[in-house]
Length: 161
Image (cartoon, rainbow, N blue to C red; front, side):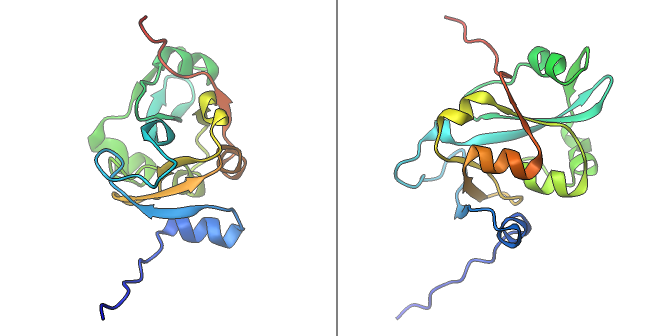
């Protein structure tokens, strides 16, 4: 009989468990992997790190199926302009490599403003990175926002209809 492999919890999962925040760890490659039933791509959110001309780093969390509006994020965060942090500077700025950025880990190390797209509130649960490529967490949007002191805002590019 095969031995059951115990999956080690990521630091993000340990932080949430210690704080008593309800979540579920899953192992998926968000771009290619099989999703748990009841979830589809619109439930998966990417954590983007940008640099504001007035505030410095700012974090935007949007569905992977959508594009962040730098203009909207700049306005809501008190900047004239925000730009994506270059991939080579990402780990130095947030502590995470591309594909592993996550709001929980970033909040533990930095006090960067965090904005979650307001459409997440229509979902019972959302999926975000757990701080390691291939590891994610399923969490209620409001629970995540409360824990990382994030604000909800309309930060998506308007769709070209």
